[in-house]
Length: 318
Image (cartoon, rainbow, N blue to C red; front, top):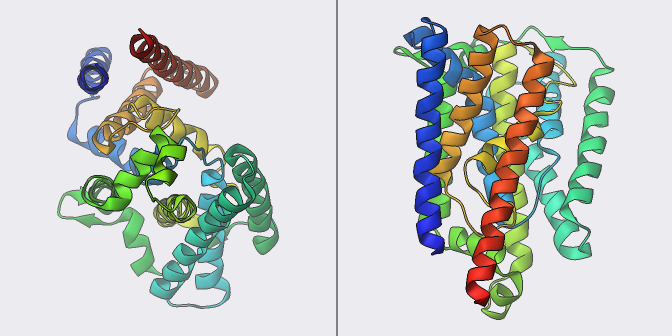
């Protein structure tokens, strides 16, 4: 029964994406132009990259509210390394990604060792590193980057923008980790039943360290792409991004209760948010109304997951 529901949900999300494409192409004739479709893909590249780490976290039944602050923090420290310290861009990127992974590891250790709820730990982390971003730059943007760095967010490989290529590579790596490694199987096991997973010999703490570290790492990669695209480091660059990323993941069919979900469906969730945002802009819908619509979509996605979970529970009991 559970497998049948997952198959239906997987097909339904792609059908919904197709319907949105048809609707917006009717409303605006320029919607399906190659330039606009590439623009949509570039816009969602940041959400898409960050959603991979968030997928792992939610598969565990956790949450990571620090994603937006990690993006902001990486924006600032990478910019600070390159501009204020004159560091080579490659070294600055490497150190920034190490920092983002360590932030995730910090969250994972506290969650696993002290057993503070993930929502509290990551909210505190969001506040801490969001504040540190402002302290490092004194609340001022940092700009004037090397041209080689700007190619990451603004360059092309043939006709394809590099941010899209980075997102595709990250999705492939993310799917490989989830589907082809024993760590990926552990993610599902913990999300399904943490106690049973521990009794089967899985090191619960190490898995949590890894998952939150990966969440920080992918958020850091998203931050690097954003910094290169914008050509300026802003201390509030990732403000609110965690909610868009969570929406993408949950809309993609990853159960908020943990234990079920696929990267391929998360790709569809990311594209739906991108298509929806772009379509609403073309329809001249205000940014405030866009926030309302996205909130309703998140509520519907979580509500659908909870209803299906309740149905499965009733079936198993009967």
